[in-house]
Image (tube, rainbow, N blue to C red; front, side, top):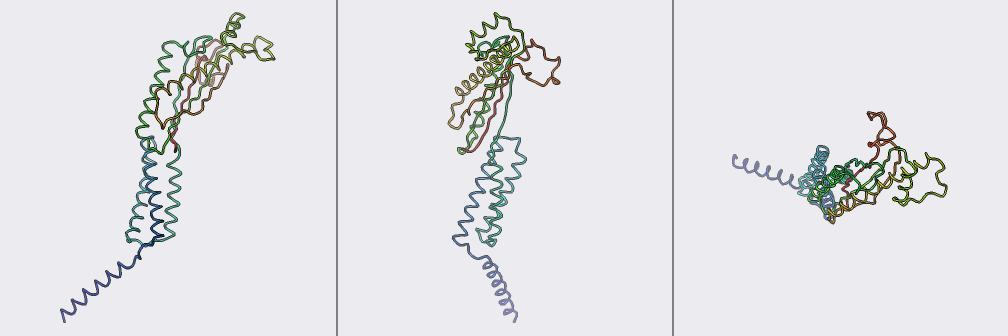
Length: 283
């Protein structure tokens, strides 16, 4: 009797185990296709997210949380593929939707912006007219950007493109312009006076200072772009369309943030502001 009881116990346990194994039906070809597509989406998201962390370490905390979620979803899909969890269409739709939402987040362009000021002498507007100190500052900025971009490119997946956008704002002060200076500026800048010529001294001064500020913006922009092109010969790096802006006698900074207050003749107003934005986006 005891032996029979043992045999029946073993048979019962074996039957239960067999029933448990049969609880999760085999994955159909169509279901496997769905699982594979979701798994590919999750793997791509993880790769993109980890790439963003390398390119923008400041976003690590937020992105690492998303990577953790993605790994949890991968684990679930593997369990379904292994037959440990039944295939549930509703769960698959939910995971696919979440994966698409995360994809939209991790594939947003990564952007970083740098700014700098370059100061000019009175009546000067060419980069070649800059003082040695200002020239070194400008070269230092270009070296910094070049080194940063070179470092990013080493980590850049083939699916990504790095774009550099250079925007410059030229400014001029309100220094009085005598007739001799006016004639000299018009000749040197090869300025074409508008049909409705400035009728007053103030209008002429504003017109010439607007031209000077425009030349400052264009000169610096062209120099920066030329130097960046020469130093960044990578297939995945490109320079976007340039933008130069002439601010004329507009103050470079808000008056209430400057001490002492701006003057008409003021070297702090004779400058070009440079803004460079590096954007990493999908190719």
